[in-house]
Length: 249
Ligand code: 5GP
Image 1 (cartoon, rainbow, N blue to C red):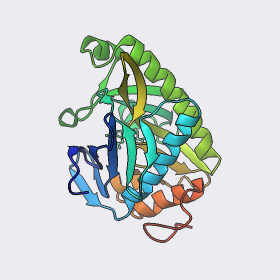
Image 2: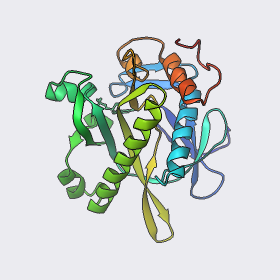
Image 3: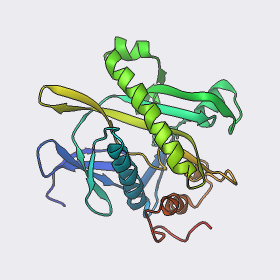
Image 4: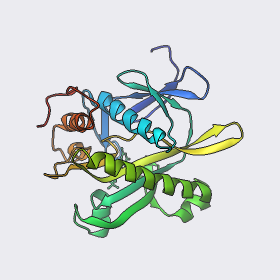
């Protein structure tokens, strides 16, 4: 591992050169950050659980024809992915008000939204990922009109899939954030889902109790963060045993 070339290190993941051109190894760290990395911790086992959850979701998305960068899971912390050019947007899809929309628009957390709402933020920590309109995205050439159309359609398909997946195991999908990349294949370019889909990037509430099973446990100092992620994985049937501590129930 030490001889591999590191391509990029982010807050929660590292990208290494892959075994073949056009591939990368995505390594999931235990590091957790919030509020533009002003709050940090290492949560033992978090990377292992997120690798499993994200791999499972991406594989299923590929299977239903939603293209992602995911190729296969290599081991406990690593997956093989296609190298893409990241589109500098955080795409947020919301079903229920929580977090920044509650603050911004004064809607009580937990209020169902009249329909799913997709928002775009410019991916820039120094600027605190400001929300932007399609006008900004096309004017500054972050993405084309065609790409925005693809992103909207794919995001809503991911929402439908995730809403059903989590709903089936007693979890309400409040919202999530996804990222997209450009996959170059010869002289063709395709918009695909990149990064990860995990409790780090989704709000997941227990359907019965509204207990939070996501990164808000870290952001809001609720404790048992990894345990909550393990509970999500256990319900999805992808972790037979708790990896980061005892089960929550
Ligand atoms: P909000 O805008 O309410 O803070 O976040 C909406 C959703 O997007 C939440 O599920 C949140 O976890 C996710 N999200 C927003 N920004 C980020 C980010 O920078 N990193 C991660 N991992 N998730 C984010």
